[in-house]
Structure formats: C-alpha cells, structure tokens
Length: 386
Ligand SMILES: *Cc1c(COP(=O)(O)O)cnc(C)c1O
Image (cartoon, rainbow, N blue to C red; front, side, top):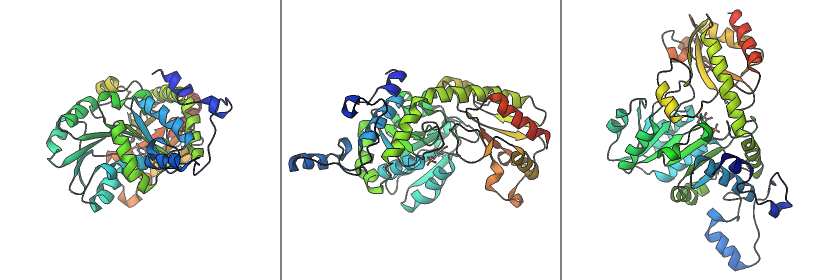
C-alpha cells in the first residue's frame, strides 16, 4: 500500500461524516442499538464493533487501520502510553514459569517491567548484549516464550540483526517483539523482517507535537485479537478519542517531520564531531558508528536522537554545558517539533558520578524541526562557555 494513500485516505469514510476532510472526534463512551439482537451481536464481538470506548471507537478505528498498514501488519491496538503497548502484551501472552530473553539496555521503564513487575508473576528475564547474535541462541531455554528487542535503543543506539533474530525465534516457536520507537515505520519495518509484534511510543514521532501520550502495538490478527480480548480489556489502557485524533493529525506530516529531523541530525552530528570540545558522537548513521553496515542494511533512515560526550568530562562541566543552552530545552521525551537535551547525569547525584563510566558522560540530544544553524549557534555558545 502506498504511504500517501495510508496517510491521506485509508480508513476515512468521509461520506459518513458530511464529507469532512478532517475526521470527527467521536467523543462518546458508548453506542446505541435498535434491537436486542443487534446489541447482543455487538457485545459478542467488541474487537470489531463500536460498543464501548474502552474497546473500540470510530475515531480510533481510522487510526488503527492506518497504523497497522504503516507497519505492514494485519492489525493494531492503540494504548494510552508507549509503555502500555509493551507491558499489556507481555501480561497477555506470558504466564508464570515463562522466560524472556531481552536486550540489556532497553527503555528505562521496560527494564523496570522486566526486573520488578513481571518477576512478581513468576516471569523472569535474561538480559543479553544483543549486538552479538549468538547471545540469543545461548540465552534461550526450553521455557523461553518471548524475545524482546529494541533496535536501536534511544541512548547508546545498539542494534540487533532483526531478520536473523526473528528467523531464529520463529524456528523455536518463540514470539519476537521489538520496540521500534526510534525509527518509526517510516525508517524500519520489523514485521517485514519477520518480527511478530511491534510496539512504539506514539508519544514520540507519531504524535510529533509534544501534546499527547500514546502507544501502538501491531502484529497478526490472531495475536492482536488475543491481547485485546484478554488483558487489554481488563487492564483498560484505552486512549481518548481526542488523543486518537491528535495522532491522526500527527500522521499527516510524519514522513516530512522525520526527513527533516534525519537530515538536520546528519548536519549537526557532523558539525559536533569537528569541535575540539567533543570527545565522541554516537548516531547510527555517523561515520565511525560500530554497527554502521547493519544500520544501513535494516534502516532506511535514522531518527533525530543521538548522544555525545565532552572532552575531559566532569559532572560540573556537563551541567554547565546543559545549563548554558538557550534554545535547546532540557527535558525528557523526544519526537516533537522542539529540540531537547538530556544528560545521563540527570538521573544520578554528584556522589554517584564515576569519571571512568562512559555511559554517565553521555548527553542525549533530540533534533527537532528548527533551522540547523539556529541549533548549531546554541551549541556553539554553550560549548564556548565551558
Ligand atoms: C518514550 C519511550 C517509551 C515509552 O513510551 P511512553 O509513551 O512514554 O509510555 C518506550 N520506548 C522508547 C524507546 C521510548 O522512547
């Protein structure tokens, strides 16, 4: 299906709403029926009927079709957060005694899910360095039910060979799942590489305007329906029709925003690499990235998040640099219109800082939609002051 068709037409039955170009926000919790028979039918199949908005809703249905098609998947489920799109399927598909193999440094709340919540239900996880394919083969046990990937991750950008891991999982009857937030379906399509379930924080690129928190999960009809019928309806992570509408609006410009963010990041990372104050720049499409060949094989482009470190880094120096920025905002999250900075030291105290720990020296930047020259000038003046 063509990208332009998905973003501009798919799922939009305009004759049902006065031929409005922009779809309506059906802000209704429930839907009415003319007969008991019709009501009974709807109650028997909430997955495909508008009965109650904890399940389906017409504004969500439009989004659901578009998000599934973007991933090349049969179907999609939409959640009130990205982490909901990760935790709910795991709770739906796994049971006590099951084992997970996961990459070692996924998103922070994903780590907490594996280390704290799932063990309460007897589900344990082995963390591995996913850059080495053989580690997956070594880590699986007869109890392994799921392999969890995040490629690239959003702080140090390690990749996994998605096709190879997906084929291995399939050969062993293990479900494969990936967090694809970094690339979005515009730059990486894991379903086409054999992955079973693709999660994304829609808060980031899909929303794109820093005004909505949401998540999306795509996969086969069978898996998505199973997750919906079971834990999705029980745990209740539905999003509001208004939030769904904001995501629909975000989708209209998704490829444009990504292209801009990708191109600007190329320019900014290259500029930074040539500055005397800079120790290293990590971005999957920069020269010198450890897995550059794999990056170009499985990604059609790169997200606008990268990390860098300062020469002779210290806790105070990193703080001073970040505090000196005048336009680039100090904040978590990413994927919106605005450029952001997040130093690793924001999660520790000065006493916990270890000069030899390279990860603690990293400063993450997200490149938004501003002019690159505007951003470079801001970085330049902040570097000049340290
Ligand atoms: C933000 C993020 C999440 C969580 O998404 P929320 O929408 O904040 O719940 C998961 N994975 C990655 C890679 C993220 O960046």
